[in-house]
Length: 143
Image 1 (cartoon, helix red, strand yellow):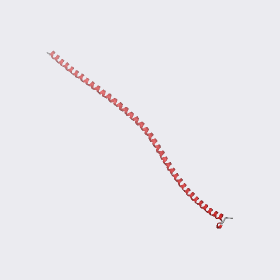
Image 2 (cartoon, helix red, strand yellow):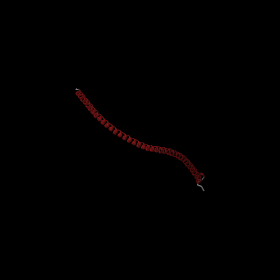
Image 3 (cartoon, rainbow, N blue to C red):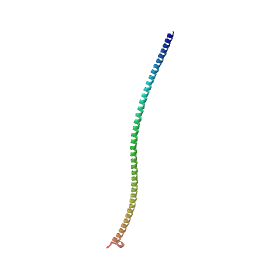
Image 4 (cartoon, rainbow, N blue to C red):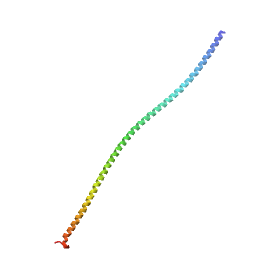
């Protein structure tokens, strides 16, 4: 009887150990499956992060090129603005010179016109005087 009872105890113990072993195997399989899924997710996330890093690096490189180009455009714009200001200043100077010349020419035209009138007046006087000398007093010719 004692032998049977120990045998039954041992059989129950063996069945219990086998049951626990089977459960442990199932848990291990589940854990391995979960681990593989997690590894796959981590690998996918790592690829995503690498792509995002590459994209960010490309964007930074593109931004650097844009900043360089923008500096060139700003430099060109500054140069163009300087040239435009200089051209405007030269234009104002030329306009002032033209106005000054216009005034001078106008004064000279007035002076020339007055001198012409004066010459015309002298010519008339000379013509009148010569006419009197040629005709003589009383309309008779000079001797």
